[in-house]
Length: 419
Image (cartoon, rainbow, N blue to C red; front, top):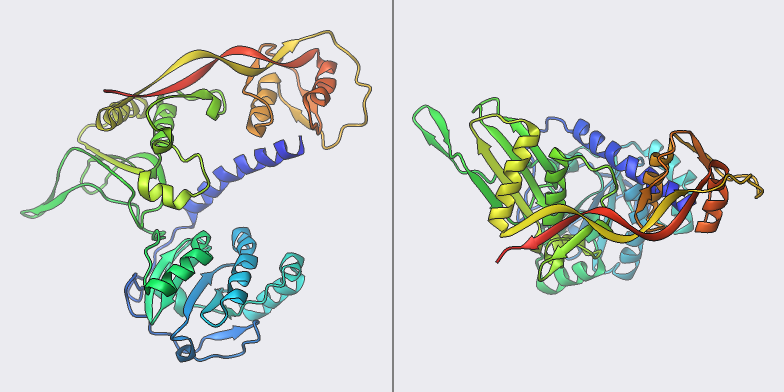
């Protein structure tokens, strides 16, 4: 049950993060910003500590790959990445120089490194550029981690920290250049064709479907009115076909269950083109992700617009998707005789409003097959940690409920290629 709660917290944290992402965006002066391929002219007055580096000369690094790893002490992903970067630095110290770059002052950072046992245990001691203002003007962003790779005085990549790998560093040293997905926190994407006519701007009314948009962050389906043109724009960027379809379906038919893999039926030649089942996210996205825009003169309700968009995707991708009921192996919540609890005191107990909520949380944990709630119990249910079905049932019996693995009918999304 412990990992179930962890997954639930991640599930909630994802939506909080999306909200914070939207709120954090602010106006930025791009007059000093550099792009990939631009020459990097180092700013003056850079302050460094740690890594046995009190001061340095950029000229001594001209033949090395320079990595600027922008971070903040509040960024857990940044901190988790530091040991990996330290290993790279240690292994290629003659050909590579990594800097952690922070806007925070030296005193704050010194306190952070002194108190962080994780970084101490991993022996992280990379040089840190503190009180940074100039480098962030050159490489503006509003989400850390943010990585910049410089080689031979040229900006080679502005990308994601997960791409700071040994393979990519060696490729850059070998070829003298490298192409990596572009991390641009400010670009929302624009597939539509626009042309100036007379005093105004003429917008082509229509639909655009494209592949991966480099430099555009992943954005789920949005439907908004452009205050300047008065047109209604529907769009999403850099999504898998499966996630895009699922997102569209949810706009007019909100799911009452967790959309797990068991609830998808693939009637296609190659399902890996539709969804990334592996961990190589960046390579897969570049090759398979899609982006979509639609411009309309008329406003429709969100649900009706979603149906229009679904028709577009079906037509443009030569597919169809539909929902139906199918028999699947499930975890079925059934009624049973009430039995007093005689086990050990519950560890980390949580209260669930009813059996439906309990079933949803168990679904999120992915420990068992998809859940079917046949008891529809409307009373509060308290469940603590459990590691297997027997332990779960020992707690549920108090409420006259038994969880049993069997065959049941659940709703599935069918994705089918059309000849």
